[in-house]
Image (cartoon, rainbow, N blue to C red):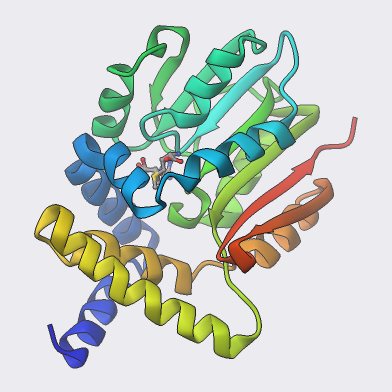
Amino acid sequence: MTYLQERDLGRQIQDRIADPAGKRRYVRDLFGGIAGRYDVTNDLMSVGLHRRWKALALQIADVRAGHVLLDLAAGTGDFALRAARQGRAERIVAADLTVEMLQAGKLREGAESVEWIACDALSLPLADRSVDRALVGYGLRNFAGLARGLAEIRRVLRPGGKLVALDFGRVEPEWLDRMYLRYLEVSASAAGWVLHRNVESYRYIPESLRVYPAQRGVTDLMQRLGFQHCGHVDLVFGAMAINFGELPD
Ligand SMILES: C[S@@+](CC[C@H](N)C(=O)[O-])C[C@H]1O[C@@H](n2cnc3c(N)ncnc32)[C@H](O)[C@@H]1O
């Protein structure tokens, strides 16, 4: 693939995710198509590091006995199943837009301890103030409306409830960030080709990251929505980040 074809592919993806309905459709089709291989690919692409980052996110979430935990944009339920293994939460809900991802999750060990719900994070079928901990792994970046998704998480969290979100981040300074995005473009196209014979399947990652406000923007949005003690932990120089914040008691 030439540089020009590459750049064109990026533009095509941007066009398709430019409006909320288009992005929702794009994301559902994308994850619906890769659901069966998602877990293996995730391990390969992060060389297993996503497991460590998820363990850290769960530690920051500080799940306690009797808590209701929501794994939002759960996919195959990594956070939900980890929390189930810890055994502290009383109720664990894994919610995702893509039915195929949830189906793959339901086949995993421990799945029977989790309630699997197909729904859109922008309109959750959960009561106000019914959740103690919300965890989102590589999900916020994919929402068709980030502010709306965060507001919906705020609605379902109880006073004192915490949100912890892991996702790709942006690095500083700007010249390094440009190199990093270029690296993601090339490596994502290569990984898509090797794993799925489709350069587009992972090329969505850098394209979605370009239009995502990343760790600093998410912190700002959370603060504006009334979350307290907001912050983020940068991982790999900010290429990954964990955002966190809690609601006042
Ligand atoms: C990259 S996967 C992450 C899966 C899992 N959380 C993990 O950390 O491995 C992103 C997931 O977000 C889900 N998703 C995207 N937009 C969503 C939305 N608006 N509501 C619920 N789930 C959404 C997709 O269906 C997909 O399963």
